Every structure is written in C-alpha cells, then in structure tokens.
Picture 1 (cartoon, rainbow over the protein chains, first blue to last red):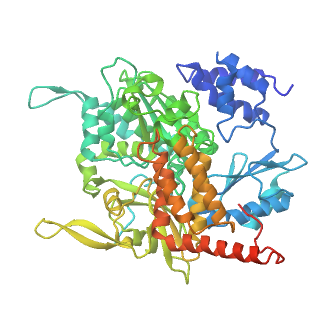
Picture 2: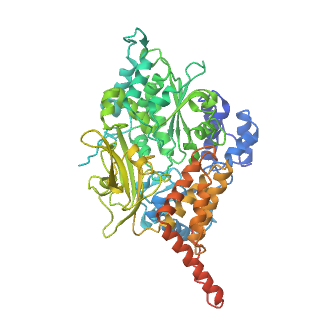
Picture 3: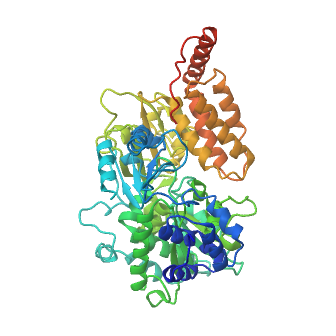
Length: 161
Length: 477
C-alpha cells in the first residue's frame, strides 16, 4: 500500500474542507496535502480523496493529470526545479540545468522530470518561477534559490544530505 | 529626471521591516481599514443617500485605478459590473498567480508586506459586501503561502477578519488557495474553475462574466495583488489625490519588473508614465544600463505576451501642444513613457509591467523559441487553434534553432500565429501566444529567414556529398 490516510492527514483535510461552501473546491488543496506527506499521489490516494469530497475518482484524477506540480509517481527525496523561461535562459538557466544533469548523471535533453537511480534527486526544467530579476533561479523542494552560479549549485547539492 | 516613487513598496525593503502584524501596525497598518469602516452614510445634493460601501467604490472609480495584472482594466468599472441584486453571495478573489514570464512584483509584496495586501483586500471586500474571499497563490510560491497564512491568522486574532470585525457587525473570512503550476490559472475564469476544484479551463464570455456568473455561479471580483494593495492607498489619500499620481488615465504607481541584460535587474516602483523605457533601462537609479560593450537589441515591454520593441523603432505618439491641440510627435522606443496608453500607441502593452531587456548577444530566433516552448507547455488544450497552434509554432522554432530550419519558416510561423487569435479561442491565451511570434518575426524577419536559408543550404550541401560527416550539433532543448 502506497497510501494510508493518517489521523493527521484526516484532520488537515477536514480543516481544509471548512474553507469552502462546496466540498469539491478543496480537492487541489487536499492533493497538495497528500503530496506533501507522501511525495506523490497514488491511485489509492485519488480514491480516498474522491470519497472524502464525495466525488467520482475521475474528478480528482483529471486534476492530478492536468497540473504540472502534482506527481503520479514517486520522486526523488530532493526535487530540483530549474527555471527555463526567457529571463532565466538569458541568465544561464540552460547551462545550469545541464550542470545539474551532468553532475547527477541525468540526460539534459530529456523532457519532464528525471530521477537519479538512487532515488535521491529529481531534476526538472520548469517554466517561469517569477523571480526574473535574480536569474537564474531554482527550487529544491519548497526552498528557493536565486542567482545560482555553478559553484552555488554544487553547494546546494552538497547540502542535500 | 525620473525618480522612484514608493507607494506600495514604501516599507518592504526597509532594514528591520518584517512581515508580521506588529511591525505592520507600528507603520500605521490597518488605519485605512478603520477609516473605511468608519465611513458614514452621506446625503447627496439630490436627496439620495450614499452608503459607505458606495462611497468607497466611488473613491476607487475617482482614483482611475487600472488593473495591475496585465489587462489594465479600470478597477472601479470592474466593481461596478458586479451583480448586486441577484441575492447570491458576492466573492472576491485575489489573483496571486503571478506567472507572466518577466514578472516578479507580487512576490515582493506577499513575501515582505503581506498585511498590506490583506488590508487592501478587507477594504475591497467591505466595499463590495463580500463575506468570503480567497487568495489564489501560485503553487510554486509555498513560502508566500506560508507567510500569507500566518498573516491571516494574525489578522483574525486582532479581529480584522472573522465575525463582527472591530465591532462593526461586518463578517469576513479569507483563505489561501494554492495553484499547482499552471499559467492558465492566471486567466480569471480559469482561476475560478481551478478554485472550484476542476481543470482550469477558461469559461466563455458571455455569459460567464465573473461579475455576474463567477465562483459557484455567483458574482465574483478577481483583482491582482498590486491592484488590491492600491485600494488601501486610495482610502488613505482619497481617490482624487490618488488620481494626481502618475499621468492622466494612467494614475498611481507601477512596480516595474526589470530583467534580462541590464546591470541592475530588479523591481522599481515609479509614478505611472513618469519614467521612460530608456530611463528604466539606463538610469543608474533603475537598470543602470546594459553590460559593458553591449548594444540594445530589443525589449519585451510588458511581460512575455506583449509585442517586442526593436531598438531604434520610432512611433507617432499623441501629445498636446502649447495650445492644447493634439499633435503627433515622433518618439523613439526608448523615449516612450512607461504607461498603459503610450505603449498601446506603440502597438504593444505595458501588461504586467515587466520589461525583459535583450542586448546584441541575443539570438532572437532562440529567444522566441524559448517563449514559444513556454506557451506550448501552458496552453490548457481546450481550444484547437491554441492547443495545436502553440505547439506547431514551438516545433517550427525548435527546428529553426536545431539546424533543421527552412527559409519559409518565417512566413509559416506568422501564418500559424495569425490563425490562432481573434475570437477563435475562448480566452486571451490565443492572443498571448501569437503576439510574440507575430512581432518577433515582423521586426526581425531577416534573421529568421537567414537562419532557415542557411540550414537549407547546409542540408543541400550534405545531400550532394553524402560522405561528409554531418555538421549538425547535438540537439539541445
């Protein structure tokens, strides 16, 4: 089983549902809560969410497949997102993405998120992260990094224990 | 000389200024909310009574405030469209889905001065009889969501939110709702669908104007972060005084996000129209000029969707002469005042007030390929011209930047771009993905054609002597 709803999750979801007069509206926030705890959203989690919000599983599944941030499979312990869009590209984002891929043994030409064999890192080239003045920018999990040189990138990887 | 004018960002970057409520209160925070809540009904000369809410809405109308998210639509007018007779609840949503490439102003407000936004929102909610409001923040700003949640908790504890706010009998609740990485959620009807827990497919207008049929088919106001912050300052100084900031029809201030090839990229708040594009790029107070030894090639003036301006381009700008007669004045693109109307006259827009500067080191075909890949990725897929067109444009630009181009690709790109917008799609994403392609190719056509022609010539040479090893470099996307 990849998913068992903990008491903690139940409580969090119950609280989230109070924010909306219509239960369905909570679905995106519920999926965020699940992904935060489990790292990804399994089919069991979809079923559980649908039941909780009195929806059909397809109602939940269709948003899971739409939003780029939501994951249908496990990802690395450290999710590295490098911004790809113009201002960051002008500031060296492609070189930075390539640097990460080379360092972690991944293929910079492949589309979509890639995870290292040891399951520690997932590297993804993402669209604009809205900090174009400090390009190139990136995230590791929820943490945000600006003006990332290759040396700084190496430090960031070293800091991921 | 152009100066910074800090209204919204007055305190954000002051040393020691923190995002907590105590700091905000020490700086006069929530005084404008108290002022708004204390408005008394007013008897007009014609004997009618104007409620406090109507007076507040009137102030916003008088201020001339235009939306800071991109479209630049009058905020007062938007509020005036709200259906107040339906008997349904009215909702307010703060659009904090800041995702237009080049734009990073709302991030500063939410991270550094969240209570300013919340105060602006509470006043806006009060003025529109809203009892439930949401802040829709983009998923990639988890830190911002945490800060806002903490700020909302503090505001509740002080009874600026919740039941019977400050004893006035007014109830309001406000929650943070997180997106999950989709640019289309910045489109207000897509945002509403997303908030409802569905795929963010934009709704067709008519009939789904949010002011009438918005969130859960109820009247809904969707305003940008910066717009809502401005409401607080309109209450503070009065609509008429606010309208004196900036230039006529372009009132107040704007936070300009400046990125790309300047020495000092960053966010700069100016009185709208009181600085030119050239000043924003070159003045030491702002961008500080290009990198040494580089020349300007082009700028994208208002977020990635706005049409590109080429260095040296001239425009005929309407101005009033000494006798008040309207005349046309030839204006270099660098001398365009940075406001809604001047940029519209130059055939582009100030949009989300994000300037991306490109110097002569930039491969313009590559720059457009980058943007087109963004739009191909972000099209929601609902309308065929946009879903297919954005992808075709991206694929065409991909081959042009990977040695597989053709001389006629320039025309093909424009033909594709011309067939996406103009009422063929439900929302303005069709326009947003076409404008860069149309304007880049129109203004730099020789570079697009030369690139495609060079590829064709190389391929012809290779075909004539098949024994020669291919020169094509490995694809890098």
